[in-house]
Each structure stands twice: as C-alpha cells, then as structure tokens.
Length: 309
Image 1 (cartoon, rainbow, N blue to C red):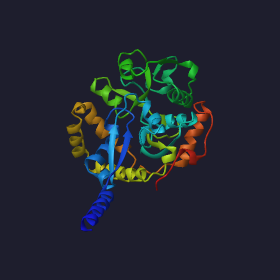
Image 2: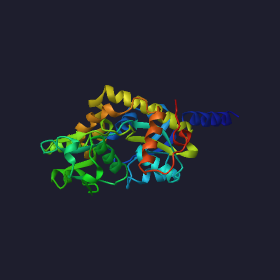
Image 3: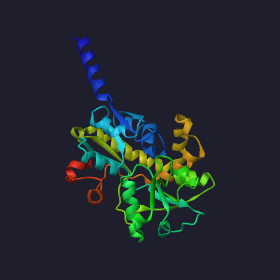
Image 4: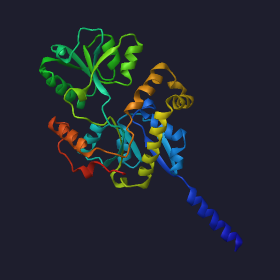
C-alpha cells in the first residue's frame, strides 16, 4: 500500500511541475529583432510560466505561418501586412500578440546624394523587394509629397537592397529596416537618409506579430508565453549590455559590430505589453490594405485577433 501511495505521489508531483512544450517559429534566423524571446529564455521567464519554449529559425521565411496553420508548430512570428494577406487567403490563423507594434521599414536614399526630399524622387528609380505592401507604401508616400507613382521607375531588386543602393544601381530603396540596414550603410561608410512611412501618409501597423492556429487561440500556453515575454522586454530594457553578452555567447556567429548596434537600436521598438493589441489601429490598416488591393475582404476583428488581457 505504501508503495502504491508513493507511486501516486510521484505521478502527482511530476504532473504538477511538468513543463508544457511550445514550439515558436521565428520569421528569420535568430537576430536582434527577437531579443525579448531570447532574454525570456536566458532569465528563466518561460520556465517560470511552466513552459519549455523551443525557438526555431525557418529555412524559408514564408514557412512559419503555414506550418502553424497546419499544426506543425504552436506560434509563429510574422508581419501584420502578411498576416492580413494570409487570413484573406484562408489560412486558419489568429493574432495573439505583438513584438514590435510600429513599422521598421522605411524609404532610404544616400545621405550625401542629390536626393534631399521625397519630391526629389520624381523621374528617379526606386528599388523594392517583394512588391505588395512595399509598392503601396511608396505610392502613399509619393502622393503625400505631391509625386505621382507614374513619375518614378520601380525596379524589383529582390533581397539585394543595401548593395543596390550603395552601388547606385537605384536612387532609393523601399523596405529597408531602420534598425539594421541603416546601420549597415553607416558601417560601410555611406550613411543613408531615411523617410519614414508613418510620417508620410501611411497608417501605423505592427512590424512583427505572434500568430497561432485559429483553433488554439485560447490555449493557456499562449497567455503564459506573453506574460514571460513581458518580463523579457522589461529585463532587456533594464539590462541591455548584460543580455547582449549572454546572447552572443549562445550565438557567436552574430558577435559583430552590426548586430551589436542593431541589438541596442531595436530595444526602443519592442512593445512593453506584448498581449495588448490596438484593435482600431489594426482595422484601420486592414482598410488601407483593402483599399490598395492587397486583400479582398475585411473580416470582423474577432476573426483577426485574440487579446490575452
């Protein structure tokens, strides 16, 4: 009888302290954009929430939302514009939280070049990657400054944004990250001049968001994940140098000046409340997407987001 009781007690304790596995797919390889997740892992904030979180970088950046929709992972990091497109295409995804709640992409020219304003882009060549939202962004920014889209030449340069601008193959580039490529250009000795979408007619949107499979929107692991992440953001803001040093010990391939500066440059952009979603702003951006032909229909807000507050 004592042996049976001891066995039952052991099973109870194991269940009480067992951690829940959570597979989180990053939008890209590990980089400073994901700092709060790695800090939450470093400092045991996930463990504190009884979570065993595995952070995985994708082979293809377009895969994470699809894999989550198919039930092959629990959470994916993606971009708000792409998420709206994915829902419009029928993917069973919902947004559960936010990592960066404002744009990082911007329109960039060479700082020492002839273009001093957006008006100067008339009859010039603007490089882009991927089309869609980036082209719509250019259109809005140009129109805000009195330039018609037909008055510029758009050139698809795929992922060669920085080099195309530095080599002067184009006069400007859209979609460059203010916390990364701008630093990259400065380190190359050819600093850039950035024009920000949110200051030139574009509605605000979240650069990086967390999505879950629609049927798992209210999974308790999601709310615990976001609570741990909130602690991660807070700790990161208070200890930027300490967390950077720990990060590069586990990711030595990223220990260079570009990533070090990007780490500190990105910290102000992380939302302090990852579980909080600005629903009016979300719908406003959805309307922008529909107006510009990027999505066909706008769903009710309850289809798009789940708030863990």
